[in-house]
Length: 111
Length: 116
Image 1: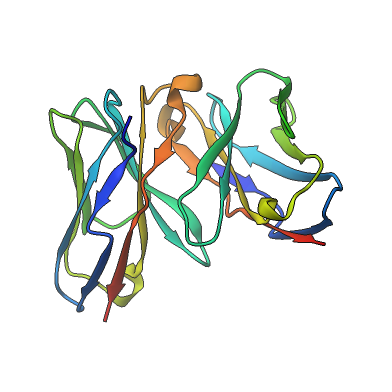
Image 2 (image 1 turned 90 degrees about the vertical axis):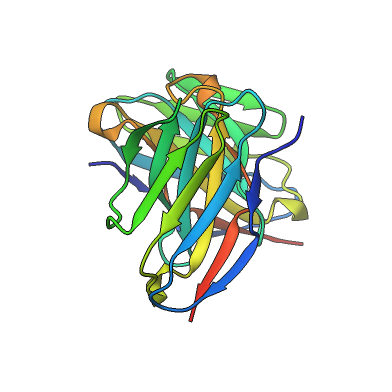
């Protein structure tokens, strides 16, 4: 079945760069998503990867290696408002044709 | 364009009761998915609907059911509530529940269910 692993918590300093890793196992592959969720709020979409490589969007970038079942989210020039949980999600194929989420990485930003 | 709406926002029930939650997707979106979110388990997939058909379901007991209407609005029902059903229930809609960027899900604010 499908499985997604990501670190539970990370801490970084304002202005720095942080990389949040995600590894997944799924039958087939139909895309990987990253979401941001602030405490008490719903998740919001950050990025989408379906081909190997890096997708850049402002301060946020996401990388995918399908052969390794691996992705990372890179956050640059960290700001206090980036303190949130970051969720990795994958859609597989066949019986795994559904979007499932990892448990999320809670990122703490220190001043 | 209005976002995903969910009603009610908060609900308190007692064990053994049943509950129905409602979700209205973004206009034009045809796929609706439901998730249960708890602090220990994160977001767990319940089911996904597309054009009134259930495309897939997660590993939840049969007490959890759902449906989608012709206008893409969706409801989920939980019967014989248990204490462990206390959670935030999130609904997400997307243009097409297949693959590609159109598979991007947009979440509603959720329904906070408390079972006493």
